[in-house]
Image (tube, rainbow over all chains, first blue to last red; front, side, top):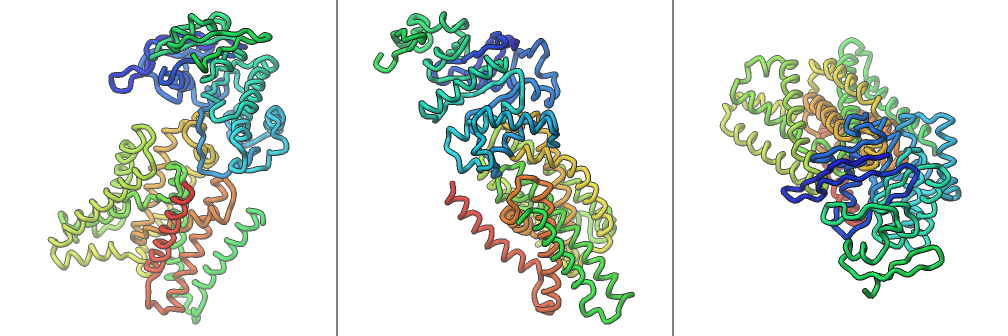
Length: 253
Length: 316
C-alpha cells in the first residue's frame, strides 16, 4: 500500500497540492481525475520522488520514500511521465532493456533478457523491437515506454496521462494492457487520466482532486454519479448505463 | 560496419600518425629529437582524450549536442586567472614561476566556478538550452573583458608572460606539466569510466533516469566537476581551443550510432588523436610551420558549429 500523508507542494505562496492524504491499495487501478491545474501530476511526481514535497510524507509498504536508496526505490515503484524527449536514438529493444537497469546496473544476465523478451511480447512489440523510436507512431512509442516500465518489474506502476495524444484505438489498447497488468500480474497501477470515461470503465478506485485537495476518494461506482461529478468539474453530467459501463455524457452539458 | 571495426580503424589511423610524427624525418636523432617529439605526442594525446571525454559527458548532462564545456566560459576563466595572478602578484611570484602550483590553482578555481554555475543552472528546475548558452557566453565575455582590461594596465614585460599563457599552442607545449596532466586525466577517467553505464541512462533525460534509480542531481554535479577538471588540465597544457571538443564529439556521434558512452567516448578520443597528432604533423611537415594547428581547428570548428546550429534549428 502507498500511504500519502499530509503532502503539500508550494510554488511561491501558492499551494499546488495542499495537505493531501490518500491511500493507494495494492492490486488495483487507482485513477487520479480532476480539472486542469488540480495538482494531479504534481502529486504523482511527489509520490514517485521526481519532485520533493514541501511537507508531509509518502510511505510505500510502510517505508518512507525519502529514506530509500534511489536504486531500491526503483525496484519497487516506477513512474512514466507524459513527455519523454530524448537526445539519443534508441531502438525499442534498447529502451526496454533500460528497464532492467535498477536490477542489473547495465550488465544484463539471462534472467534480465528473459524479462525483456516478456515485456516486449506483452506490449505486442515483437515485430518493432529493432525499429528506432523516432520511426514509430505516438501509440507505438507510448507502448515502448510502458514496456520499459513492465521490464522494470515493480510492484507499483505510476503513469502520468499515458493516453495523451493517442487515438481511441490505442487508448483502449493501453488501458486494456494496464488492466491485464493488475489482473494477471498482480501489479498496482496509479494513473492520471483526463477522460473520465476511461477512469469509469477501467479503474477500481478513483481519487478526485480539485485546487490541490482531494475532494472525492472511493470505489469507482461511488464517484461516477452526477452529484459527485458536479462537485469535481462544476458541470451537470448525466450518466448513462451501457452494458456494464457507466458513461458520462459531458459533451453538451 | 560494426562499431568495433570502426574503432579499430580509428585507432589504427591514430597509431599511424603517432608513428609518422615520432619517426618521420628523424635522421637518427634518437637522443635529441625523439624525446622532444615524445613529450609533444604525450601532451597532444592527453589533451585530446581529456577534451573528448569532457565534451561527450558534458553534452549528455546538458541534454544537447552544441554546448561544450569551453563554450561555458572555462577557457576565459583560465585566462582571467592567469592575468589576475600576474597583475597582482607579478611574473616572478611562485604561482607563476612554479608551473605545478599554477596548475593546481587554475584547476581549483575552475572547479569552484563549475559548482557555482551548477547552482545557478541546474538547481532551479529545467532551464532551456538557450539559457545555458547565453549564460556561458555572457560569463565568458565578462571574464575576457576583465582580462583584457587588466592586460592593458600591466607592465609590458609582465604582459609577455600573460601572452605566453594566452597563445600556448601545440608548438610550445608545457612539458613540465605533461606528466602531472597524464596522472590527473588518468585518475579522472578511471573514476568516470565506471559510471558510464549510468551516463547511458542519464542521456534518457531526468525523469526516466530518476525512475530507473539514478541519483540524477548528484551525478550531474559530479560529472560537471569531472569535465571542469579535464578541461582545466587541457587548457593549462595547450591553451584555449574552444571548438575542438565540439568537432570530435559530434563527429563521433555521426560515425558511431551507439547510445553507449563507452563506445562514443572511445571513438571521440580516437578522433582527437587523429586530428591533433595528424594535424600537427601536417602543419609541421607540409606547411612547414607557416600556420598553427589551433588556427586550423578553430576555423574548421567554427564553421562546423554554425552548421550544427542551422541543422538544430531546422529540426526543431
